[in-house]
Each structure stands twice: as structure tokens, then as C-alpha cells.
Amino acid sequence: MKKKKYLQRGGLLLICVLLGLALALLMKGQNLSSLSEKSMQDLQNNVIEYQRRNEELSNRNSQLQDYIRELEDDLTGEGNEVLSRLIDEREGYATFAGLRPAINSGVVINLKTLPGQKMKDSVLREFVNELSALGAQAISINGERKVSTTEIRARQDSILINGVAFDREHDFEIKAIMRPDDLERSVFPYLESVSESISAQLGDEAPTIRIEILANVEIPALKEDRIAYQFDLIKPVLNATQ
Image 1 (cartoon, rainbow, N blue to C red):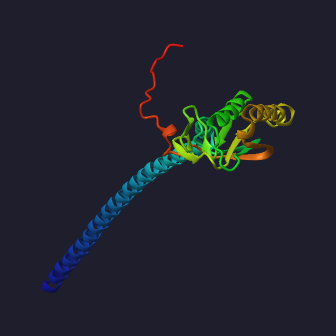
Image 2: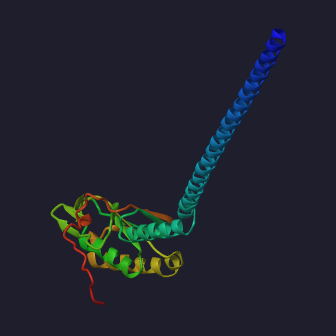
């Protein structure tokens, strides 16, 4: 009887142990399932965040690429054409004003005085004035660029040009850039007549004059240290009426 009772208690204990083990395994499985679900959710959230950041970076990169293309267009497209045109216009005005060297077809007039005689400033002015009247677009005298304020005047033993003194007993050279079609047809014959007129007027005091037509006549720019370069007193008139 006792043996049977012990067997019943042992069986009941075994059943309780098995039930406990089963319950423990079930709870463990639920915990693992919960943990796995939480990890998956975190991973999904991280993936979503990475996708969002990647999209932001992609958009930013696209904006930068657009900006780079705009800069390239400014440098190689219409913007650069406008800038180049403005630079060309500025250089054209500077060349016209005598601030840039110039080269083209033209005429060279060499004047040489006889020993003991002095060059007359009136002779230089006459040739320069005639060249201007004939359409010369650039003129120089002994390397001094003629501009609107250039002076040519005698002072004792020298002739002043742009404030620079040249010995009156030395040779003088006048250069001018002119239209090639006019050089042979009209310019050269007219300058020859001017030379003959000067020789007739001055007689023995007239300088020896030689006139040449050249395909390339180079005329220097007005130097910045010359008196003719000064413009600090000039003020533009704003809203001037035409």
C-alpha cells in the first residue's frame, strides 16, 4: 500500500517537473520571439533612416551638380561671351585712346637736319596734322604716342613731346597707321607734296625728309609716367543731356 502511494507521489512529481519544463520552454520561446521581433524592428528603423539620409545626400549632390553646370555655362556659354565682348570693347577703347601698342600698315617719315641746324617744331606739327587729316588712326613721334593732349613745342635746344625733351639737332621719326588702300593712291603723293612745300619754304634750313610705306608699322602705347597720361582732374558728367 505504501509502495503504491509512493509511486503515485513520484508520478505526480514527475508530471509537475515535466509541466514546469514545458512551461519554461514556452516562456523562453516567447522571450526569444519578442527579442527577435524587437531586433527586426530596430533593423528596419535603421534601414529607413539610412535610406532617408542617402536620399538627402543624393538630393544635395544633384544640387551641387546643377550648380557646377551653371558655373560651366557661365565660363563657356553666353555669360563668357558677354564678358569677352566687354573685355574686347574695353581693349578697343584703350587702343583708340593710345593706351595700348598698335601695329598695322602705315607710313614712316624720317626727318634729318643738316649739321649745325635745329629741327623746327612747326615741321613736326605740320606732318602730324596732315597725317591726322588723312585718317591716321595712330601716330607716334620718336616713340611717343600722340594723344589728344600731346604737345609738340620747341624750347631752346630741345623739342618737348609728351613732356619728354628731344635734342633738336638729332633725327626725328614720325610713324602713322593708315588704311592700306589709301597709302599708295593718295597718302604718299600728298605727303610728298607737303615735303616739297616745306623744302620750298625753309630753303637751306629744311631738313632732309624721307617717306616710306610699310606693311607693318608698330606704334608704342602712351607711357603712364607721361604728362599726357594724367587724368586725375577729369570727372565724368553724370546724367548729361544729349
